[in-house]
Length: 472
Ligand code: GLY
Image (cartoon, rainbow, N blue to C red; front, top):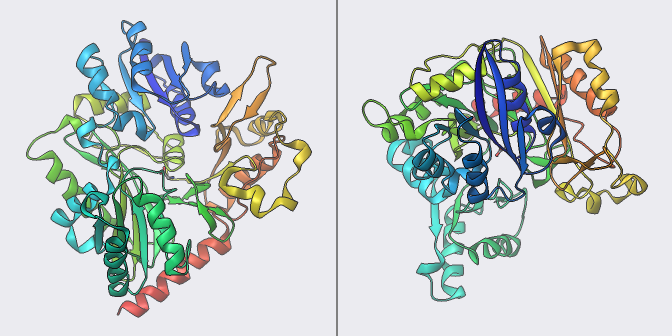
């Protein structure tokens, strides 16, 4: 068996799923070199070399890679920060180790303003109306307030307010969801405007889906659609989070989508890709340069935003369902020969368990938190045992969680651990994920109980039917 050394720059559960996919290779003996945000128990156990770099700064990652450069054949990066900070440019430029992620120049995620302007140029019909408020262009608060309120008049207050710089979805505020008065909107706007440019764009009514594609610089290989659960609490309430869960149906689209929506999404992203690629190939776009949040309206999909990395959790079900060897897929991305990817036609549901402070849960639902359990070790054993019942159809991926010297696992501040259920249909996959999530004990962790629930999906289907009816 051929030996391969792989660098993984890891943030949380998404990269534990990559570790799992690599370790399942049937064709390669894989040695993993992992630069991790925390001592993730799943990763630390499987890595040949594991280093903790809490802020994932590119200089420390580079030093780690330099120490092991003779043994590393290629690297892959999950989180946005090192990509935006130019990790690929640094490692490829100096060490000649191919990296799977876009170069700094093509990390569109670094600026929402840049994204909107690009979409306006290449796919204007699916770009919501927007206006950029740049602090450099205003001399006084009154001036910006006047312009902002004029824009709000024009859009009838129905807007989304987004900081230019990435905030993992958390800086986004939406009229009717996060604020209901202009005063509240202004407060949110100014909190972001004091830091840098802010986009105020038309709020689009619809249902969201996540589009992801592998890219070798020459070809775009779209992956099945997934649904992200951004809001913290059941019923899509509370602040935005990194994502509390996701689901994927058996095929390529979600239950509320039509095949035309999927075809249109592919056309849109292919148009953006061609613009950035030019003729031939642009290897700077390698990785998952286009993970788009789409919103489905009665007239078709529109673009909410572009990320230059795989989604967390959206890529996890895809990785778990790959029929092709993930090492091979990576080599093909590097060679520029990735024209298709074979994915098992199964449904999958993923649920995250998170600590009490995450999403402000402890403040909104103080009575539901078992305070004596806060900070206690997380016990995964019972959930792990479910593997004897479900085999590979259950996956447990620790994220913001560390193994300490006492041998116990402790949750940190972000999404602690996820359980993925795989089955022939969404509801059966959900049952597996739910059983797994309930079997995880300790740390006073909590989770959304409506991820991929029948009611939630039915609501999305009905909502789309209504929007389509209104549109015609
Ligand atoms: N699930 C949202 C994200 O990865 O940004």
